[in-house]
Image: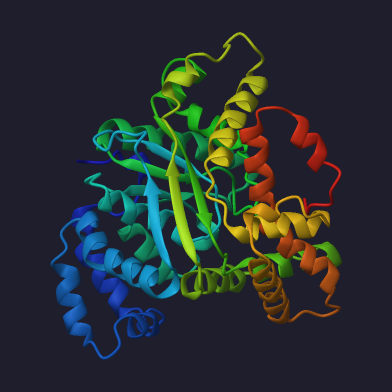
Length: 399
């Protein structure tokens, strides 16, 4: 299919462009150490031959990405599973998920979709701030990513948002592919997963008809991602203190690369994905006469509710909530041994943080918050009343 030229600045590579992209990637000196790590003692000619045998992006994902992800799951986790019985594998969806890991959130979803018989993967929304290195950008575009333009001037942002929305609608309606996009810009460093209305406004920008019509055309499915352990938890805590102590501190390109590297190589424990029902039918119940901003807030809250109530919680999530609240309310969800193990884990993560004027009490609270927030949100979502929300508001979670 010929993709309209107006999408050229943001779209993935097309099949006819792959051969040149493979050559460019393999010739990049910065990529060669990565290749040597993934395929030790394998001649580059053999890798090149295998790449050039892949005539589509999906074939590349099956030949290269899938085995790498399977190896990561085998060596850096205790397993992965997915609950997807509420969606039709023959349809195409826009998967909107909480965001923990820069690379793996969407990558693991791609693998799981193949495993359950979807027949295709996702086109993945990725910020241009993560594509500063040539080899990263080339590899990402081979791997079906489209670019979220974040580094533009404010005067250009409206045009970019419209183009991205129109492209997303094109992917669903014309390319008949899935889409993955995070519910917010960037990862939720405190694990308080809340959908940004700006994401929904962008998604509604490029469709036809009303706001509800446009969002319905994207067939949104909320996705809950639950990692037992987040390899980047100590990096997120470190960033909290840097932002607290240095008001003008900003991440550099090396910070995101470090997070990618740690996230991929670090231990994750068990991993669970849940695909909630597509919200198309629910959208038809939304009051379209209410103010526009209020409508987007209602839709965002519904997506949040679907994500929160479908987390898979682990013992340490309950331990963290008891620790941060200084209570023993959830002892029926963990053993004394599991409590002690998580305490040892927190101490080990604190030891990894090398920072000037290290504030261990503050950093400990940052780490606990990352594991406690999913528990808080799960309980609130499944309680169905505001009682727990009011109760939790008394405790000092990281914002």
